[in-house]
Length: 78
Image (cartoon, rainbow, N blue to C red; front, side):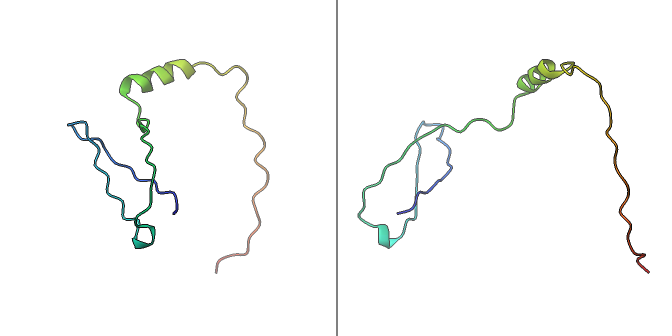
């Protein structure tokens, strides 16, 4: 049996219902389920503000643009 990852949400009643179609070849087998909370991918407005405040003004040094080189020579399109 292969490892399956299924994302689901715990209901407001605190119960997680899981339905996994694993197929007849894996019928009558013992399985193990691990429950791990998923971290919030989108920061809250306060978390975003704090991250900006922690990084703003931290660069120490000169901002300079390095040489960009030469343009590539190409044949005309027409």
